[in-house]
Image (cartoon, rainbow, N blue to C red; front, side):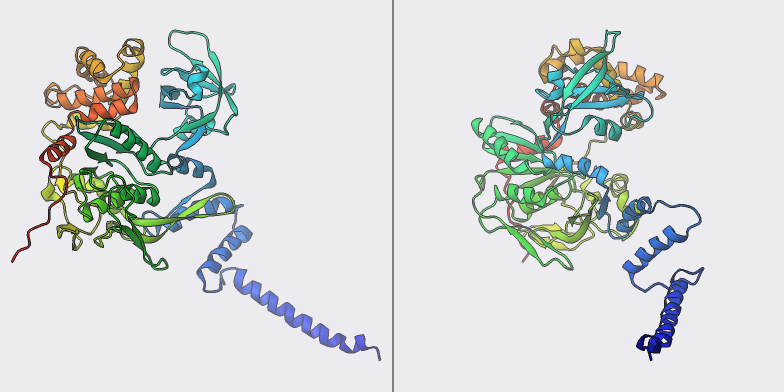
Length: 542
């Protein structure tokens, strides 16, 4: 008898059983409403996408579905775990990398047209002949105006690989013909230390915009510059600094702390405690120091200010900081997209968690926290600050609070005496920015004759700028309210002058103008003159 024939009935039966098993599996997993997926989260998600792709009534772009689902999934964890698509990644990382490749202009979009606000000195655009006030209406012979023109669209068109060329069609004031300029893209520096100068004969000032890859070397250059002017005290301004790299904040704190002082530590469920301590090599360990913060100071700003405060190394002045104390780790996918996943929390040397309270998922109160603080009066009165966390002690025994953010040692609130509903609407509506751009553009040649803040401010004082703005705003729908305008006159004038100064001069001179009557700066100088920048130990009750 043939051996193959002898086993044929067995193979046939076995094949039928296997067929029934496979059929049952697919019927149970993908048949009609009888969905029976392995009870595992990852398998559920994978199988769900497979089912949608295989059986949904209409054709579905599963990749697009995943792109939309990723942010929603991460938002259920905490407020700072985020997904960044491959196309948005470069833009998200440029600010912290210290440079990017592009043409080198600052721009605003007005009436569906890109207008050059400033041209970076010695940058590609300036070398090609682009001027502030130019309107870019064509890029590479294609129209560059209309409703499609957004900030993201414009940056995508103007940025590009170094040494590549981009052809710009430009309309210039006073010229009827379109001017064609070819710009060769180059490396554009993105400085994070955006102002360095002397506040008085002895006190230096450094403003740090964010904490990027080059922030620490930029700080050393700034300190060397101030050393040439023989500074003896230092004010570091972190107001509005939303953070950046932990390493940069640690390096800067190290410059001011004695050896083996705890700067910050991190800890999470799967992340063992990791401490960052000073190595004693800092060159400014004994210099009187003030750090300025406000509600816009977050993350790495809070690490630096917390290290200075908890070690009693200097005085913190301003308003309570934002309260972002979650550590994100970037994780890259094959397509170039990344997630920034929270893996730990930051703690200051005293043990405070910087992170303010939140609930998982879409937390409306968290998103509106700064508005809630404003409405409760926290920006104006120290008594309105609500401490929800426990008390901690600095090295000298001073009380500091957990529960979110860094509370300053000396509170400086916003001045509300001149704040009116008219000023609020004028500033929040964008009308001041629009007016200042138009005024600058109409008077650019005349304004450019003034090369410093004092001379330009003196000129503006005689131009009736506030009245001109009120007339402009009235035509734009903001009704003229003379009594309110008079009450807010100083605030309006300061805001208007500052934006015109920014448009004509550089960023540092703009900051110098704003600081000239800043109460936090005034308080810093008072403290330095009194020799009280080093916090003293609190007297313990007996």
